[in-house]
Amino acid sequence: MLEKQQYPSWHALLTEAYHHGISNMVPEHLEEALKDIAENTRRSLLMSSEPDGPPRLKPSSGLICQGQAALMLEAVAEGRTIDGGEPNRVTYALGHYHHALVYAALESALPADAVKLVFEEEKQLADELPWWPEKGTPGFSHRGFIDITLELLDPEWLAPGMPRRLVADVKTKAGRSMQYGGAIHNCAEDVFGNAGQVAVYSEIQGTLDAGGIIININKEAPALPEGRIGISYIRPDDLKEARDNVQRRLEKARAGEFLPELWLRRDEMKSTGRSKLFVPCNQVRGAEVGVTYCDVSDECAKRREGWAV
Ligand code: SF4
Image (cartoon, rainbow, N blue to C red; front, side, top):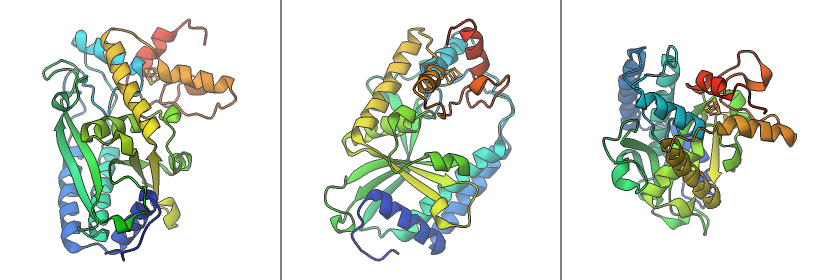
């Protein structure tokens, strides 16, 4: 376990706890992690290549952009599936692997009377959020899982003024992407919806005023500890903005309004000289075929044909 001391921030405490826990794993927590890893690796590698029906929006998927949400709901209305290509099974398995290790590391490092950790808490979204479509609404998932809810039980572990309870989400990232994450997560550049996801779960937990946390884990496992984990804090104002964005996208998309937000944002950034912003859309930066992290990017590109931007 970590020695008791007053850490200046959640960022400092969690970073230290992760490193300490990985190097001093408590066998029972490791065994728990190994069970999760085995089960989730099996599930990821044996998952079907075929979409199992029309898409479903949830806090972690389909709501990073109003255009994405609108096109997905159109597919739902027409009973279409969306072919996202052959799933990257290893990426799914690796994500579960890192989640399990983060949980085991934090449990191994943080005394139970210092910080209460709740992992993978399941929530019924329509029961928790007044604006989430009611259960049974086609196109929407109704279950959500909160990666981690952190609660400081012993105030001597953190500097005064630090939030006592907040939500954290674990993300597995490429080394290059780790360079873009900072200690403060900027809502304007939240192109993968990470802040939006934390925001929705923070609303459910009643912790929007505390801010939220993204725990980024480098899947390339670099030699130097500094590059292995990057923790970003989302300030309360950014978190509330992210939450409002998710609700707006959901409502506008349900009303049939297509707006390729991220594509437009990239152009806006270009015009202000900040063209390095990566967006998950296809045909990035004029390339004929670019990298895409959006399953409806082809459809979106067709809709945009003839647009001036
Ligand atoms: S391609 Fe980009 S702008 Fe279009 S729906 Fe996908 S994320 Fe949004």
